[in-house]
Length: 197
Image (cartoon, rainbow, N blue to C red; front, side, top):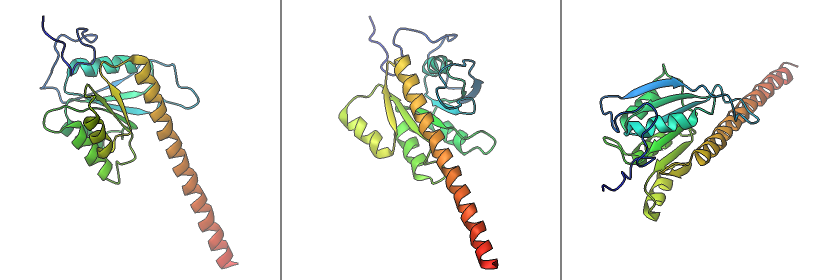
C-alpha cells in the first residue's frame, strides 16, 4: 500500500470533477463561485481570491470549499504564474492569496517574500496552505511575510473561517484608507479656504 501524497490536501480523496492529480500544462484559470452564504457583516461579492498550488486536485478541492462564499476565484499552478496574475493590470487585484509552499519554479516562500517586498502588493493578505509542520518551516513562512497558515489536509470549516477573517481585515483596511483619504481632502479644502479667506 502506497503512503498518501503529503502534498495532496485530501489524501485518497479525489477533487470534484478531476481525473488527474497534476496538470503542468495549465497555468491559470478563472471562475466565479456560486455560493451566497456566510458574508457576515460585509459584502464578499467583490472579493477576489487567488488559489496557488501545483496540484490540480488541491486547487479544485479548495475551489469547491470556497463555493460557499460569493467570491471570485482565480487560480495559478505555480509561483511564477501567481506573480504574473497579481502584476497583470487586466486582472483584478486579489484580496487574498491561498499559497502552497512546495511548488516548481518558485516556492511559496519566495512568492510571499516577493509580494511582501513590493509596496504595491504588500498589503494583500497571504495564507500559506502547507503539509509542512516543522517549526523551521513555520518560522520561514513568518519571515517571508505570510499572514496565516492552514495545514493539509485542509478542514473546510477552518479554511472558510480563516478566509473570511482575512477578507474582513482587507475590507476594513480599504475602508480605513478611504476614510483617511477623505479626511485629507477635507483638510486640504479647509486649508485653501483659510488661505483665501
